[in-house]
Length: 443
Image (cartoon, rainbow, N blue to C red; front, side, top):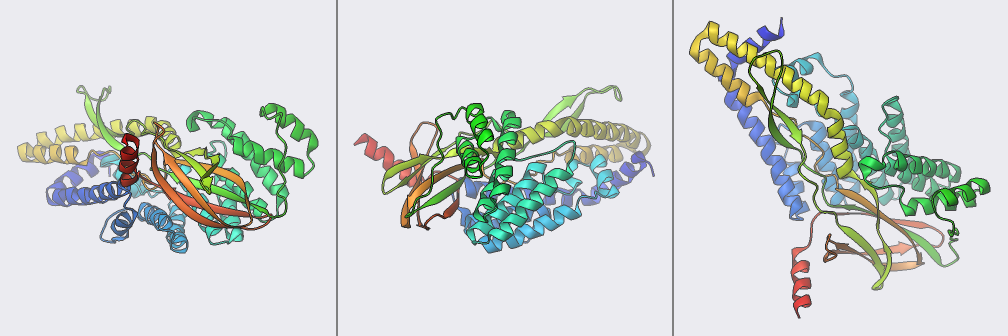
């Protein structure tokens, strides 16, 4: 059966299924919009309730990713990993794409292809599962996730999608497990990947990683490399700090804001296949939203500014830019087939058939705007020395103008010579705090 004949049969059935098609698409879009609105207002519990509603045609992978992240935001780390496992299993099963899906995508639109996530999303899935295990004090399982992420990145071979934060996180996990040599390797890899991805990440090697790499090299006796890297990384005055008795370490990983959400844009395209221009729909990202910075303090004393270690906003835009040529080519090919078949249907079937063909073409032309919308915009990090015992910690969030917009208050137990982790999420300004700050400023 040719593409044209398959499309003609689809169009004849469109009068029956057109309303169902519209209802299904509207329901899926409505759920995503509702979740985004609740998250943007900082109402994570409401967003989770929407995500947990099973009455949806949403892709299982996408639904599992969002539910897993929202459970994590609610500090249900075990429940988060249970649903992340579902996403991971389904992603593996989707490696072999069906011929039916490919044909459907060519005839109707790209949303008929099963969602398995962009490469950066697939790798970050392992990172978030590892962070869940860290919060559950299960570093062995966290190590397994990092190994799985490494295997996945290696599978992509000549076209890798190596993630510097994932390499960095691996090094921290290896250190906690006492695998110092493996930690050095991961820190080295992270440094190299930060350099190679600086354009899409929009920043270079974080200072906190420079310090960790140099400290690890010094401790493991790589003196020549230590001296060479101090010069290369412009850290000539750096001296590795030793955790003395009575002190431990706090590692704060802050997932800040929300990743960008894809929108649909319609454009006109010119092709030699037909005399008229054709309309196509492609995904696009709106302009980037403002970034928020964060500061860490204990006992009302500034300890450190959190540093950017992953720009997920940048990764998302780079991934779409990379895919856009083939997305556009596929959309144009689909539009040409629809245009030619519409003319044929109208000639052979009359005005009603032509109307149905036109209606089908208009309704079915949709861009694939699916993405993991509960990912953060950025990941920021600080690593500081603190005295042993319970420590009160504040993470203050500031907008681009330097105004305090929220505060996260935590208590953390610091153990001698050990590292303690906070892997927190922050999604939206606390408006009551903003209003209070404004009133105090006027006074």
